[in-house]
Image 1 (cartoon, rainbow, N blue to C red):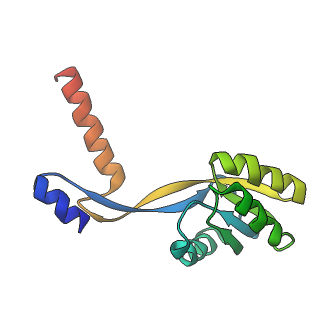
Image 2: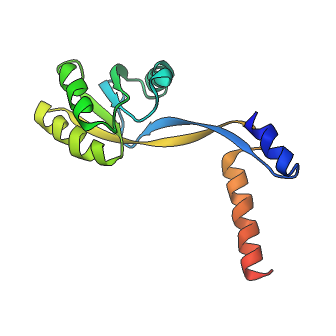
Length: 143
C-alpha cells in the first residue's frame, strides 16, 4: 500500500520495500543467546527463527525493551544462567546496561547491525542506492 501511495505522487519514482534483520558482528554459532532489541514484540518469533536459522545459535530469550534501561536490566537478570551470550543492537542502553550486565554475569556481549533485506518493490536496495549515488554525482559535477 505504501508503494502505491508513493506512485500516486510520482509514478516514475522507484521504491524498494525492505525489512530489517539482525546481523551479528561476530560469530555466534553454537551459543545460547539472549537478544536485546528495540523491535516490537510482535516480530519476536520471526527474529528468533531468523537468528537460529541464519547463525546456528539457540535464542533462549528476547527483550524488546532496549530503550527502557530498568526493564531491560530486570529481563536480563531474570534469565541469567539461561544464556552464554548477550546479542544486542548498538544503542546507548546496550552499552550502558547490556555490556555492564554481560560483564557482571560473565557472558560475552556481541553487537549486531540491523541489515535491510529487500522484499519487494522496484529492485534491489543496493542497486537502487548505487543508481541514486551515480545520479547525484552526475548532477553535482554536471557531467
